[in-house]
Length: 226
Image (cartoon, rainbow, N blue to C red; front, top):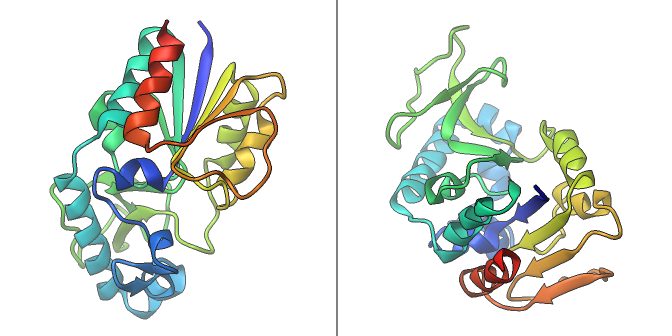
């Protein structure tokens, strides 16, 4: 069975109504990302950061997968599919995809402030101050903040090097280290990009589908399932 590796970014979630800071010049839902998405922000004002992510989590739980998410799940009828996503929502899971790598964490989980390996499911949308891990440390969102390492990146690189088909959806390929994953894909492997905009960086041997995710992804999936 051939292996498809899919890299998804903000564009696929945006069509389900979820916003990201890169849509508005460094602001995320009206907040400067430095104030809500860095370890320094957490140390400076943990209540603000916790409140911010509680609201984002509520938005995620209210959102529903779109046609692109469901189309990707259909690829498993014929291929071994791994989705590497930069998004912190769980829309791929809810659409039925079974193998997802969350490079930047998953907002429906919490992690220990002392040991990030300790993660826990969050029941509902609210993570409260005073909720602690088994070590007695405050729980924080399971999200990779600016200035923190991306724990799954080396595994993602290995998966890309083994791909028979590589698909990029809804990302500008400007955010590193995720953007560099395409460099690990073997040169002879078919590569597709689905996005409303052409990437600003030149990419060779890339079949570009300049359409929204909810239109372009189902079209591509139909081609691949023939």
